[in-house]
Image 1 (spheres, rainbow, N blue to C red):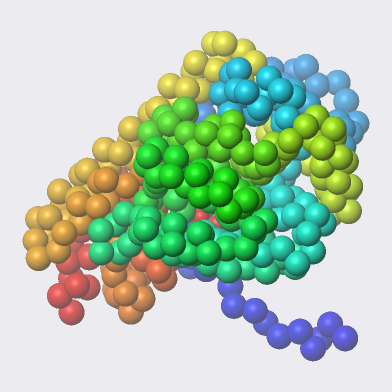
Image 2 (image 1 turned 90 degrees about the vertical axis):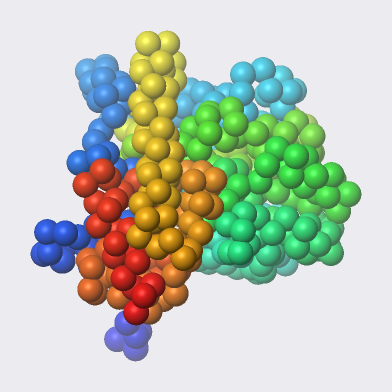
Length: 398
Ligand code: LMR
């Protein structure tokens, strides 16, 4: 029976990792997978993570199971990190959290929860959205539809078109939003736009599912969670999927959690019972190590401060690279305006070249990015900025 299966195309993001590794050209540049890199192109273990890890390992005296919902201390610390200390939803005991294997695990748990609550639910995602949102949401049977989001002409958000579409949705539709550092476009909502969106969600009784995978890598820890904090204070129900892959650099440790804000502690307890059952039916319990590290960092004032400094270092490097890249592009491609790259936030931007030009960049210049021309800003460095800008100029000329 299994031999009938046909080979599938490789994942649009992960497939690039193997192509890049196989390329032996010394000039190669990896702007593909969304992993932070330093100026030497490395993805180092953060010093705060290294220190916390040593403490965690020296204290560990068992490998027995932790708990169905994972590490309770981690879940609580993450709820406070995302919502902010003293948030009204925390004070009212309206938040329930479950640790999950990375941001993907959290997103899938949320999608499965929505499907259990309302089997015919439709979830609306931005155009474009992170490629893996599509299988994560639709893989459990949720129907997926799209709302307008990115405006290639301005490099910003098509906010009126977004509002127009969301304003026509039936009540109780779910909408997937990016908290900040929108993947793949880098175009974020302003605070005023979040407020306007909130009115619409209230008026239309929509259910927000907010993905936060880059807290602290855009503008700051509080600023990057502005929309979440607002929505969770003002709406009866919100789901928030959190990843610790990027801001703690814990990619391979698969560390994340799902927070669900509901109307009452009783409703929250019922929701959590479903989440635990769903997790049990997929992977039973999440891995411990990454969550134990994050719990240690967030609970120790000195480690926390060190982590916040390291996070600020990553953020500043990417913001600086955005400005430098725009300068280099202005020199090499004066006919085209790339200033939108400096106005955007986080790890990604669309370069705005077409797929044949993306392939020419890969095949002729060994510069790797996804076919939609998404670039990982952190893959740029003082050594390759000029090379990449020249390569872009060449493909635009041809
Ligand atoms: C990305 O968008 O490149 C990252 O989030 C990695 C991934 O799993 O796709």
